[in-house]
Length: 296
View 1 (tube, rainbow, N blue to C red):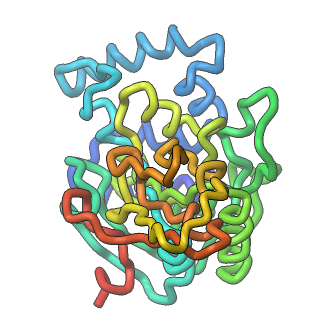
View 2 (view 1 turned 180 degrees about the vertical axis):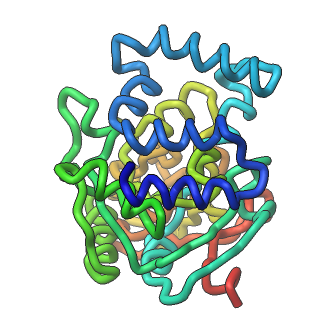
């Protein structure tokens, strides 16, 4: 057994409300993440069979079967859209962090903690969602695993699809992906010790979570912000419409923003040539994941 596997098991034993099934689930997920995601998206021939198996174990351990479209189906695996500066702050943390039960920020029953052990340990892996596509967006190595024991596990088990990066390199990847119009999401998963473990840079054409969102399964939640337009500065160039991954923007005589669809990722703001767009807090949505404020 690899050292990183033993460390994951040790961390699992210390985790609150974390069962043997969760430990096994977490190991399978991280060990065979490409197969796991491919099956989860429905791209793999085994998807239907595995769906029945997962349903069986779900009934066995929780007494109910996951139902697409039901919030409970996404309770254990979800992403929070985050603006570029928030993502850069998350990969720049210098000290270990332990933030539990962030109900206002991450409104799920499980997988809502931020516990960063060795936060300067960062690895990028080839995106499992893109890798399963016939014509994926590029580049591939844009998914970031943050902290231990996750980084060592990924490096041990996926050496040909991962590499370590510095915090400065991680910030550069985030900036480059934002320029491509891709959205940063902070990902949380029950099987990964019930906590934050990754930042993915997602496009709606490849991302499994964003596809699930469009199909009625709420796997992506708002940053806590919405986009706002200064109509006096807007030149109706539609550059923002072209980069919005959530289809929240449209131009028809003026620029319209659908506040229900807008996830507050800020990509449109960064691509507006006239500076007409900005992000504003929306009290009706979960609070922002502002790591500096949360750790103050």
